[in-house]
Length: 217
Image 1 (tube, helix red, strand yellow):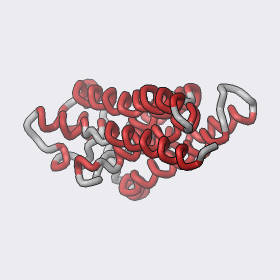
Image 2 (tube, rainbow, N blue to C red):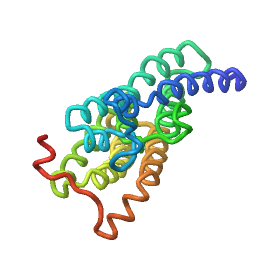
Image 3 (cartoon, rainbow, N blue to C red):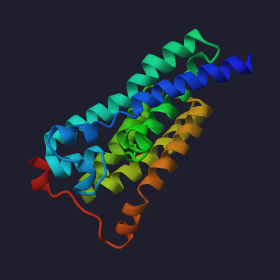
Image 4 (cartoon, rainbow, N blue to C red):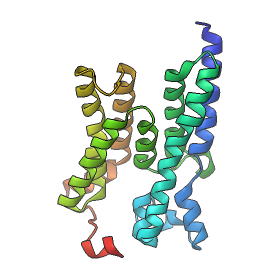
């Protein structure tokens, strides 16, 4: 392997993915509605705060856009360009995942202050590991139904990703590779760190809940 070409190609894939990941859809949706989402609710640009401030429909739109922002770079940039360069498809996917998630959490478009990365991470990982993401989605849904707390559901879903991947790797199911497990572990840790304020509020019993009435609005 030509290490110089490998690194050059990998960095290019990561940077292109980072540019896409840095599109702040939550912020843009807020501006479309005449406000700066960073000054309302939890002040986060993610789908949960968009939903809290602007309603369910805009929250769903934001989630889908952030999800696709994770999925498409891995497919269109990581897999395609990786296959054409010294990186290869597998590492191309890894560079693209790192780039697009990094762009969402640390977007140059918003002075490197972005979202918590849940929707974008799920989209990015889906491109390489379908079943762990499906399990993570189920864990999120069950946790949310039981608690009505989005942050707790997101943390539990993040933890379930590397755990599910490890079990599937041990059983030789789903085409999971060791690098996938490591990457999911890093992503899970990053998501948990991004929820540090939520964790403090959870410990103090002060975290906001979505009421069933607000979920329908």
